[in-house]
Amino acid sequence: MSTVAAVLEVPGVSTYLDAVEERLRETVGRSGGAVSAAGVDTLASGGKRLRPMLVHLCAPPAGRTRSGLVAAGCAVELVHMATLVHDDQIDAAPLRRGRPTVWRSRGPLVSTASGDYLFARAFSELVTTGDMQAVTVLSDACLALARGEILQREQAGNADTTPEQYLERCRLKTGRLFSAATTLGARLGGLPVDATERMGEFGIALGLAFQIADDVLDCDGDPDTTGKALGTDLLDGTVTLPLLLAARRDPDVESVLRRGAAPADVLPTLARVARSGAVADARHEAERQAAAALAALDGLDGRVDVAALGAVVRGAVERRA
Image 1 (cartoon, rainbow, N blue to C red):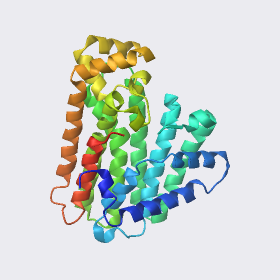
Image 2: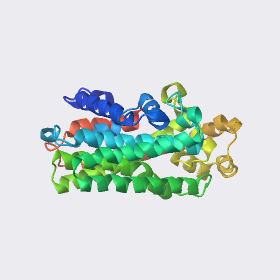
Image 3: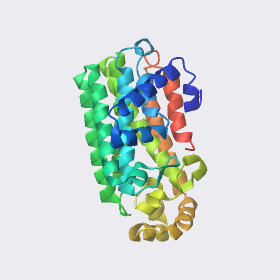
Image 4: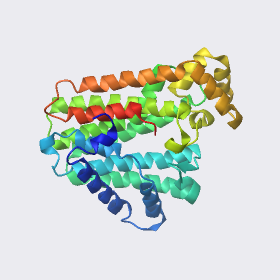
């Protein structure tokens, strides 16, 4: 088992994701009107559904049919969808996965309201579990997301941002929601407290590996595969690990980051980033975080499906989209 796609062959995973998808369609479309329709459009744009998959896989095999796991998977995906809608508005992004964003197709008022609607729907789903600690786990992750977004705005265009500051932003904006998914699966699936805490640590490291790999793809990915143009981060001033490492080695890259990139800067700057070795070094950091995620699983074989979770980790750093 070497890719995330292979995880779909694990007994029960596809059935679980189908149940989550059905519940997402029902809850997002329940209210009707423009905001609900925008949510339905966001849902229709698809996605990996990686966070719900983690909810399922982080429950022990004997606990995967427990009540609440589908609601939890639905809730974490709704939060993820909400952040994408708001991020696209903040970034004025025209496309998401090759489709017009809510901001582009329906305007900023509907975009703001539909993101808020998806957040609200997430908690209305999770509260059905009756587990208030689970609600706290997700609400804490949402607070971290907000803090991470503020950090991203504060760091925009700042070539003096350190790799440590970048990693803290990623921990808040990406790692904490991954950790919420892994924690909710473990908790609602019936793992003991010590193992649940380990699964939370696993989620943080996996989220960091995933985000760094995503930032690398913005520098050297295939737009036909990723669904977005190269250099999106560079153009909107988001300082990512490969850009920060390159800026320390190449004054021309540093200059572009400080003054703000124009469209004509993108390809020449990304070529300099690659030549500096920054892309390769950022990939190495993604692999280091992936190793930390795998280390968090030590001793848990037999309580969770370590092989399947290992495939998710490898897929996160090896992916091309």
